[in-house]
Image (cartoon, rainbow, N blue to C red):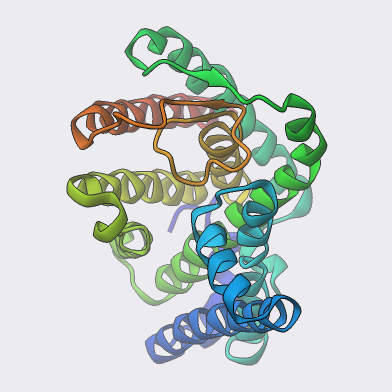
Length: 295
């Protein structure tokens, strides 16, 4: 066990039984869906059946500002579910999944800066490969929603990091000695959670590989840094770039500042962008590892 990772693993050891972790993960997923059902029922009661069905589709697609905000709000269920599970099944605090607050904030800032400088710089360098982009017509609307949207991305990315890198990874690290178990298993599950062949078609497997790679990068940086902050900062910056700044896939584009063409983005056009994103994330990971080695 790396000394840097010990503070996140030690609270998991007293109740590290595998059945607890499997049951806990299942309960988190169940409570997450219950939260979404509760939100759906509230929306249905307010709008009625016909409007509800149409709005539900828009929320799933993040097709407009309020739909995207509501989609982000569904991830509060993962926060609540994780809090319930760690208290009832493991007798540990939610904070023990994150690390010391000062370290989390420091590492979050590092991840944000690394992604902004390296990821943003490489994106600008590769901009000739991007499809033609256009500004949204209503810049004022985008600015008005931006604070709420940033909070939403913070909640969404934090929930995913909390479940996969905070809860699952630390519990598996406490139970199994080989490091690959706690690194690869949560990353594989993270990738599978984003597998959607109905929407992504031929690119579903590339998206699975891309999200799985990000999961592995986040898992390694959490293990090396000793807090969830670095992975969370990278995840936050990546999603702000892909959802709030530049959208080329046509999904979750209700608040994107720059958008690709509404038509013509075939799987063949998207595939190089997805592969380029994987190379970008690898470069950011390498820079973060070098930084951690120096401090």
